[in-house]
Amino acid sequence: MSACLLSTPLTFKLIISMKITDVYQREDAAQYLYQLLEERAPHVSISHKQMPTFAEHCEFMHGAPYVCWLLILTDVGDVAGAIYLSKRDEIGVALFKSYQGRGIGESAVKELIRLHPRRRFLANVNPANEASAGFFRKLGFKEIQRTYENAADQSQ
Image (tube, rainbow, N blue to C red):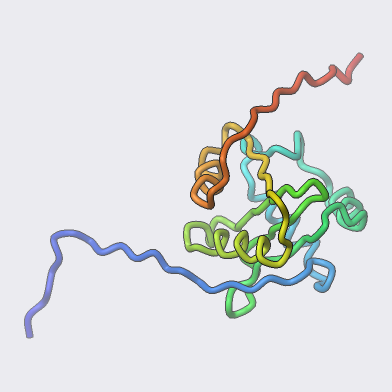
């Protein structure tokens, strides 16, 4: 019996099929959403200057801030991430690092767009988050603006 050795290693991009479910249909959704926030690097966040407490996070969730907010599940039911559509037609998507690069986020965005047709969709991306910008460009999104902030000093 002979061994077959390849001079170049093979790389496979594993695409996992996904399902989506409303966050308000799962009792454990708040915990998964909070874990997504914990895993996200602070420099790429556009929505949080500092990590909220779990209680603050739950209060935000119970305010139903989005038109739709969905958990992204793998075909075997594992939570891979979350996606939302804001009242201003902004799409936000976050995947646990272990599920990134497998086509799940792209499938989730396409499904959200299919389920909630609009004239246009927006995606707000932190300028430091080139991976997210590239993700949305790949889906046909075009850069239309850059937003700048001059935050008031709260210590005065």
